[in-house]
Structures are given as structure tokens and as C-alpha cells.
Image (cartoon, rainbow, N blue to C red; front, side, top):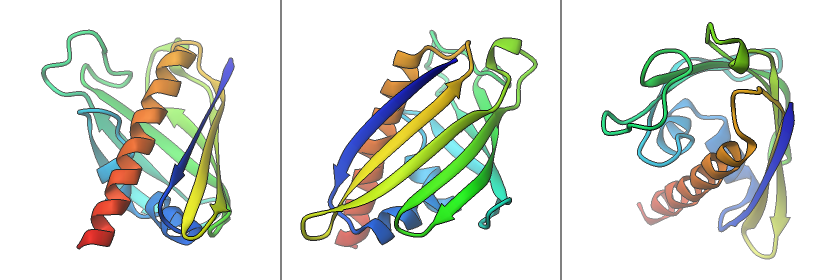
Length: 158
């Protein structure tokens, strides 16, 4: 089991960034890396609650295969800690019959104010299942954080 860490400074307050992590509509828009799409099936924002989400690979994807279905990664996240504007801890399990992707992975997200109106977002994945290469997890998280920044910029402009 391995660990990855990604950090990005985003031009939005910690409260706004936190809301993007705790809104089903926002998660569908930015959490999925690259050309993938997302769907939140259920969502309960409280400690002990959580959400179920699917990430769908584009039909054009030839290399990557889904963990749940051919083009789908479905997972359940349980909120272990919710500290508005400061920190979120999630326990994540993939819906898969493949033992290489089973087990509980932890995601810890920190929101640190930086300067006027910016936030340093740090995402730490721990206990990553053996079937997920750490470099792939790190790259996917990097792409998601780029989409998060774009999502929040678009929300400001509207």
C-alpha cells in the first residue's frame, strides 16, 4: 500500500474550496480527471455519512479499464472528519471484484489560507490499493485539482 500527496494553490477562499468538495454538483464537475465524467448517486454531508460516485472513462479510452465495469470506477466515500474551511477526511472503497483494488483507502484534504483570497489545497491519499500505481493516482489528482481551479474561476466569472 502506498501514499501520494498533491498540493495546489487555488485563487479562492478556503470556505469556497471546501464547498466545492462538499457539493455533489461540484464534485461531478471537477473531481473526475481529464476527459472522464462523473455521477454522484447519493450524498449525505455529515461525519459518518458520505457519498457514492461513478467515474466514467471516455469511449475513446483504450489503455485504462474500469475497476467496476469496463468504463466505470464506482466507489463509496465515508466522511470521517468534516472541518469546514480546514480539513476533510474520507475513507474510500472501490466497488470491484478485483482484489488488487479492494480495501479502504484514506483521503485527507487540507485547506490552508494563503495571502488574500487564495487557498493551498493538499490532498493526501494513504493506503492506496495495490492495483493503482501511485504515479497514476498522483497524475489523476493533479488533473482534478486543475479542474477544481477552473471550476472555481468559472463560478467567479458568472
